Image (cartoon, rainbow, N blue to C red; front, side):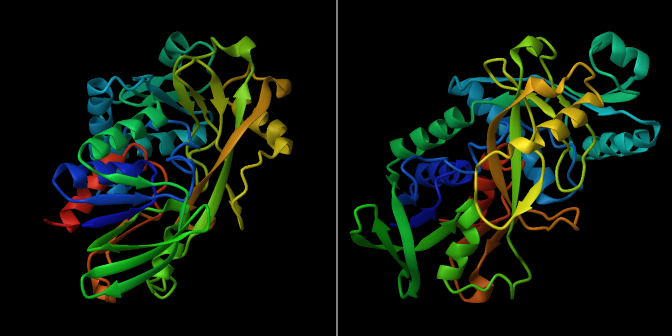
Amino acid sequence: MDVAIIGAGAVGLATAALLASRGDSVIVLEQHARFGQETSSRNSGVIHAGLYYPPGSLKAELCVRGRELVYARAARDAIAHRRTGKLIVACEAAERARLEEVHARGMRNGAGELRWLEAAELRAEHPRVRALAGLWSPDTGIVDAHGLMQSYWAQAQTAGAVLGLRTHLTAIEACATGYRLCARASDGQAHDLAARRIVNAAGLHAFDVAALAGLDTNVLGRQLHLCKGDYFTIAARLRDLTEHLIYPLPAGAGLGIHVTVDLGGILRAGPDTEYVAHIDYAVCTSKQLRFAAALRRYLPEIRDDDLSPAYSGIRPKLHGPEQSFADFVIEDAAPHGLPGMINLLGIESPGLTASEAIAQEVLRLLPT
């Protein structure tokens, strides 16, 4: 094959779609029985506008570019989506300056139209929200993440790409023609694959894939941090609480415990941020009271018993709990003796929004 892509999440499938469409022979290797079973599907399904990230960062630039690509693809391929808009609130006077910083950063990043709401205007437009000021982002929305990935895969498959499911990668060896990949199928059978180039889009396992190729990511100054986030469903009695997304100001390594709405109108709270040592998707039910208290800061109608466990997700962060930001890594490993291997590391939020824009960057690094 011309290219072997490791990982069939949103980014891996978007990359397969673009590479196959330009004429490359592409195979996507995925350890699970279906595509998109980890980070790509265990999130809020939010199309981010590009408000939070440092101007000039890959997260900022690719989020803004990817946002428009996702909306265009969703309209073209009839993928369920909605421009819900998002309200970010300052609940205390001390938070006002931080909200102003988010406003300024969003404007610099090209996050679309943003509107400042003072308390009176906020109460008039969002009467069930309690806050001193708000920032309205009309270009934020939600998308059916599975539908988006299905669109990428349909494009890739039409162009001749192959998807190898239940395939566990066991070795990567450089050779004269590129790379030899060894894999094991679910029935235990071993397979060898020759590829001129490799795209490591393995998400939570991207560091493992890099290590199989002989890269020591610690020597490169990078380390994977697993950051878990739990979600709770908000009771049906509050289904009309909001049609929009409502966020507090960012807190720590995340965006604060916020409220999102899915395409079926169900409201959910989360995610929080909890650094963990292992992948475990069990929801910690003891967080219920803390979640409810966090929501009551700006949604006073929330009761403790309005929350029930939903699901959890894990982000592959490149920064630990004491650090504030780490950018996406989209990097050719040629300087480390592995030409034609592209490593995608730390692809967390806004990775779903930026997925097609990230794929465009991979194409730039892998010219025909």
